Length: 281
Image (cartoon, rainbow, N blue to C red; front, side, top):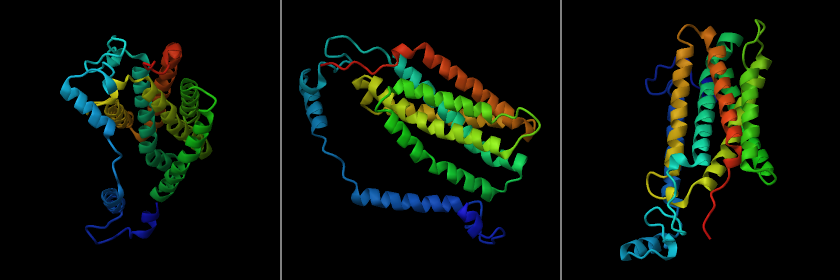
């Protein structure tokens, strides 16, 4: 939004224009980040990892491995496949849903606000910046609430508000106002960001230890689930607007409402199984 005010609209510079100025800014920020990372980041000691590698080399099954070299727990029972662990698959689907809805909301903001309210790019950018400022308060509220409530309770609450936002933002009549859109989009954005905290917390507690190691671990799978959600969100948004901008709002957010309601139904169905993994003594 600030660059929109600073960069001339009719700039003759091929390398610094309104369209690519944000890209240059992010490149500069990432460069500073990488330099600071190289200069100041110290990897924590990996004594336990070295001991584990030594045990693997010597063929011993005691100690850190806890008789788990072949994917078995310390009591001799093998961990089930990842897709059969209900809390893990559920949190993956919730993560896909929230990224799907969040990406669709952010990608459609400039289009919808221009179509319905005649906002230009600077106003839409300022509004998105204000939305970004709401992330920290939302996460603080979740952090406080997590001291008194389980992760699954917070997940359901956040999903409920996200569904409410998807319903509020829909165009129910010909009189569609900016306050209605603002209320719905704020509910969606805040609840989706708040949902990520308890959802990933439950995932980290429910995953067996052996799935947290190696390259293809649960962190990578969760990242790919989020990436898939963003990609599908953009595709659905494009399909909803293929017949005109006037169809984007109700078609896109109608599908989001259905997906959000389905996610809530899934969590309610498996609510009793959304528990942390029982760690071995």
